[in-house]
Image (cartoon, rainbow, N blue to C red; front, top):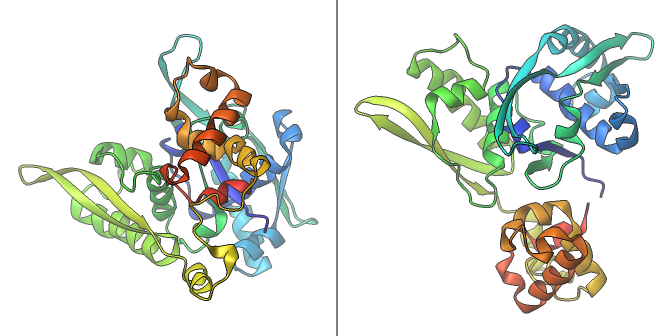
Length: 315
């Protein structure tokens, strides 16, 4: 099955911005389209998002979807984001601001929106190596709150450990694009945080809860803990004795070519690159990395438990 993956550099995941639900959905569809047309997008090419595709993905009427997309054009053109990223030349963290798009418009006769991503955005969605996050588009389809979408992204980048680092209230508000809205903590929790958590728990692949941090009686920040929901279909199939659904964390039945494919998967590299030193041969040469990881997988596959091993076969 061809999974539709939303993939972003972690500096973009952690950026500060405010986008409505439709604007964020347009970005998702454009990212998927951009990664499918890598040669085109690297040249700053034009991407088309059709109302028919939007309607199908988000389960709305085609006419309704196109009108929503047209209204979102102005907001997306004016929108920007602030992000931090390591400067490779100096080795220092740089703090930047960028717009999402250089150009955006719509064509009534074709029922589509056209856009060109800003030059800063392109490497954050297409030329990804180590620090990035990806998830299936279907996980955010049911989210109707712009804050639920953003919170899901902020949380899911911690998938391998199941909880986030503590995040201050000020930083969380910035990342959610809140400037003057919901300044009272009661309103923030009720209209933003609790609503977002409720939607995430109902419509995505994880269940979330949060811990409040206080200075005296004042809430100063939060830590989010989450668990991946069990796949009932997979469990049922396994109980029924379907060999294709045996323990997904083992390498039983996989040959060296398949193990090599797993080791080369960018998601596998991102999940386990801390296993080798950046100055070691395996940390500098992908072929040496592949040989080393095949060896380790054979010796003890169960040490690779950040996600099911066989998921890395598909990319």
